[in-house]
Length: 563
Figure 1 (cartoon, rainbow, N blue to C red):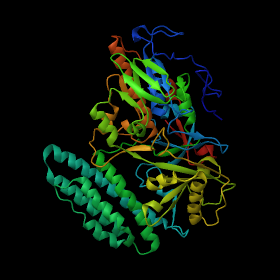
Figure 2 (figure 1 turned 90 degrees about the horizontal axis):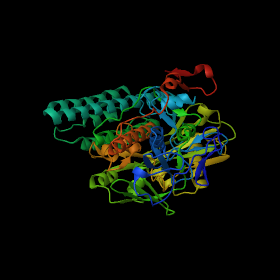
Figure 3 (figure 1 turned 45 degrees about the horizontal axis):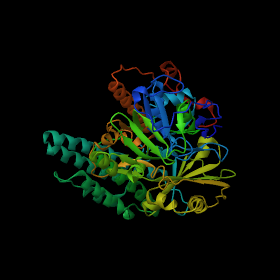
Figure 4 (figure 1 turned 180 degrees about the horizontal axis):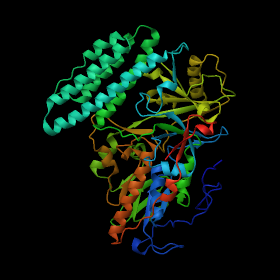
């Protein structure tokens, strides 16, 4: 088991096999006059960078700069690294309390070389990217009503097809709108919107949900109408889903799945872009993400418990002051804290950030998702990967991830999002676990009491203030790019800065790599030096280390090697 990283005597120490070295101190003093003469006790003159934030983005940035022979110090406010990636071992086995999936199990994923090199297994939850449940295949998802009755699987699949078709045609609408902006082809947009309407009609006919047919027929978009207004029409249809179907199960299921359509639709419309997904489906990190980030952090100078209060950018340097009054000075800084922290303005920038940067921070949306992990003596629930609940409102809809399928341990993860996630943060751990158990009893009436539980509060955690970023309705399409853009010698990283992989671990990782490259080039240019960079991972090792993914934690013969 990997131990937590701790700080002793000002240097970073770790007692596990992944991080097993002590690294020298980065001198803390406000008396450095210039970076051209900055000296260290163990090396000659080096260029220096301060990285703020020890999540995947910050650790990746520090790793790249360290490999490029920069002197790097990383300041992390928590007493651990990882940020919104947090692997807990209190159950006797790893459980990720934050991010836990690898989205895009393929060699194109920038995290694939690291995960493959560490020989970390994944548990497949989705074989493709076209599921309405995103990372979960409908065929292994069991839905139940509030009385514990399972919804017919055929109906689940039919409504899933409707969802998928609507999203596909929505993207076609957006592309048509872009073309309209370029060449004024108004008829193109109208044709695409008509196709969306017909797809909806066709699908509900197949599912024999005649009451929905008239609603889709009413979806008519005028040529001058904006897509966000059109998305509102779909939202209204979903909100009236109580009249759909012929049985109570049909009504609740259609409500659940269609209630999820507007949110995704509006997010796509809002950003005027498509989220890019790597191929290969999705997989849970069976041993958690901690081994990955610990491997990246090996040998780095990391200061835990260093909460940054002020970032002062000067002509040729950056001065960073932490809560205990210590000051650090370097050539440049990479700011890799969550956008929720930037929005809270608990970090003071001197001088103020430009107006365009502040607007980008302010206009970025922050979502909240939490986990309540329940551990049991033994397994008593159906042998499926996900147990979902349908209800009359989106607030009542939730699901459990079956960790037994992935790890062999008797544990369920109750996933809450939106207002429900915010409300559970106001409860005690015991009350939140009790709420999750009440929901479980509705699905499995004979459920036994949990013997242990874990509860997250990412929304109220002062070091995160949210779980993930998203594009708000009507935001300009370049908002992520503005979040990423540097301000003099300040560089920015984090999942919120990756418009194509926003909200994902590999997005955070690649943003840190990108910020480090930009920072390195600018500092070298400032000193008139040539560019030299060492790869983050040995490329010969990458080629020989395929990802290991399976849908069985115990059958090694079923493992797939993705080269």
